[in-house]
Image 1: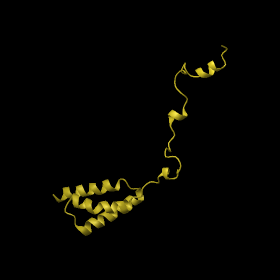
Image 2: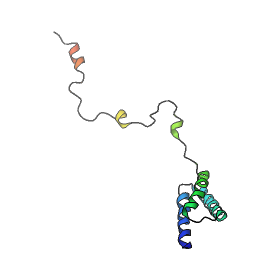
Image 3: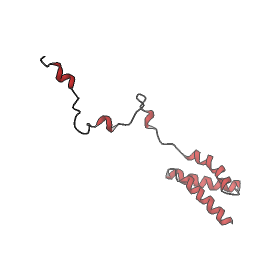
Image 4: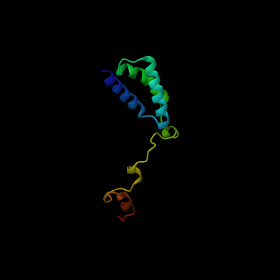
Length: 104
């Protein structure tokens, strides 16, 4: 039974470390092993309660490029706005211009 618990805890440590950058991953795994040894966790749930706050300390969120654009809220380009229209022009398009100079 002890081997299955340690395997579950090892899997938990690996899962929590997977989202970290490689230098932070090794530091987190060492700190996690030390924290689990100091606490003496009885199971996977107790290990998670110990490791979750520890993992947040090693995780650096990626930079948010949208914060640099303080103007418009729509920061991504749209194909619908930038691309040419698809298909033939509408026959009603420009009707006012064609009738403006028509002789009566």
